Image (cartoon, rainbow, N blue to C red; front, side, top):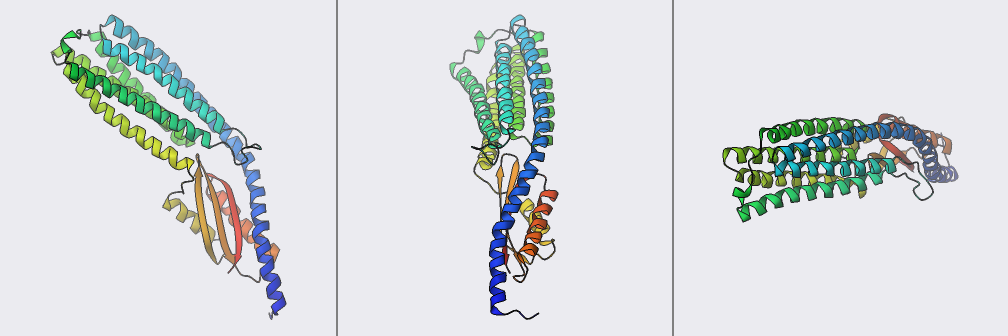
Amino acid sequence: MFMGPGHNKVAADDIRICGTVCSAGAFFNARGKIIGGNIMQKSNEQIAMRAGMTSIIINVFLSIFKLCAGIFGNSAAMIADAVHSLTDLVSTVVAMVGIKLAGQKPDKNHPYGHERFECVATLILAALIAVVGIGIGWAGLQMIISGCFNEIGIPSLLAMVAAIVSICVKEGVYWYMRSIAKKIDSSALMADAVHSRADGLSSIGSLIGILGARIGFPVLDSVAAIVICLFILKTAFSIFVDAIGRLTDKACDDKTVEEIRTVILAQAEVEGIDQLKTRLAGNRIYVDVEICVNPSFTLQEAHDISQNVHDAIEREFPKVKHCMVHVNPA
């Protein structure tokens, strides 16, 4: 069909207008999805709260058991380990508060939601894990420097049994919390799971120290403490880096970006992609894309194409919370 210069100008203007209209339409639909997303977040929040309460109950009973075992089993290491287990209660509460805040609905001051509060909680947990690691390592180093190993009493078998029980229980809690964290994609809950494992590692140090004291080599406790400290610090650093990435608009991994690109190009009448940007906000994804379509399409036709792209992205990628589609002439 022949199109004069005036028709081309109108079509081009339509496309420019469509870029704005389709973006607004995408935002409107994103708002509709946020409502559904809140239902999913509410369910995930309830799962996280149950997991957190389970962890708290286990830690309370385990701490009491280890404290009694340390007192009656003549083990200062086990008493210290019991106090350390109580710090897990703090980390779990921090994780639960962070998840609770992240699950709030968007408001006037936070129109895009509160997901990043969970990242803030994760940073706090990373700091707590690092402090635990440094404390364990420093105590071991001080003992080696002082050389006061003869002052350590010989613990009873009860203390050794308590250390073994603690290792098994804390490892179990770690895998339980880890599975829940992966299920609901919660960085704060994952950090809390790692903190639980750090507590288990400290119990390994206690076990080595108790065993070493019983066989005449108490220095083993201090050596083990320093090694465990390094493992804990490495883990804390990894958690810190991940949380910082989610707070600073880090892009999705290359595999996810390519999958999104493939979905977009598979939509009818999409001739190309001028720009595709993604960013992480907590455990959710934001997508901004500029697609190319035939400049002869009307405003309504271009809008329908962009709507199809928008819907396809949100359908194929449930983590996408907000998708903005802009239309350019090819």
